[in-house]
Length: 328
Image 1 (cartoon, rainbow, N blue to C red):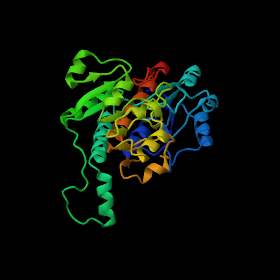
Image 2 (image 1 turned 30 degrees about the vertical axis):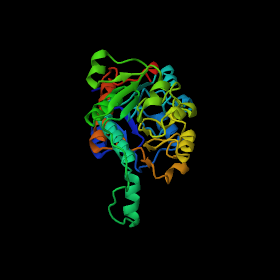
Image 3 (image 1 turned 90 degrees about the horizontal axis):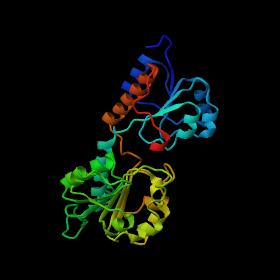
Image 4 (image 1 turned 120 degrees about the vertical axis):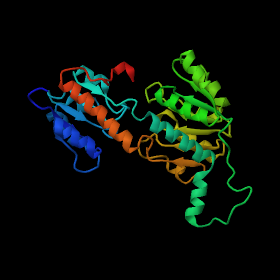
């Protein structure tokens, strides 16, 4: 370890085990309240510290990076997605950016299946009846949903999470289809018995369930726009645990209201934490508050990745999870 301990600022409350370990290794300023830092607080932190540990709730744009002090040399993001950080501007300023990839793969894939089941089996409606105390007993035709077995699943983005979803969906007897920037290797495709679609339009039109698992980049913004959503079968279901910006939420809302789509399971929204208010009370829409990666195990593993990135940097080496601008 270098003689002088690095000054590290953590922008949100993290699991206690992670905060304790960071405090043992570095001069850490922890967040007292579990609320996002204001822009002024972020600017102040970035002016003073060697390492900033932000989360998805901290928009670190060119303006903030421009105010950073000479000492700031690493932004060790707590989370895999870095679209809230201007990585290119950071690079130009000589500030490295790292993330925590691969940690939330299984947890997010589990949630995809949970949302798929919740929508296709009408759990939201059943829950509402039980909570209202209005259930009048079993009936042969009540709450009829559709089974997942035999259905075609179209995975949009076949990276780590997309493949983990495919593995789970296979166990449910679903047929796996996918669209990706690059086709998978034949042996990977074979393992999932997956069908590759070069044309997203053609895939979307034929699927029973679409799962969005691609990152938000300029090229994926509104990838599922109004025109593409219209190609979906009226009996199809859409699940999004990735980034809200990938879907035109207004168009999705209109289609769900008009009965042009069977349902949706959403864990992310186009405008941050504000899902379209019209979606909130729809019986065929399951909305969750960005819970996809929310497991104790996952959050601690994310913290361990942050620790490893900061520790490696402190020892004078390149962080193992450094983000290069072209990568995301």
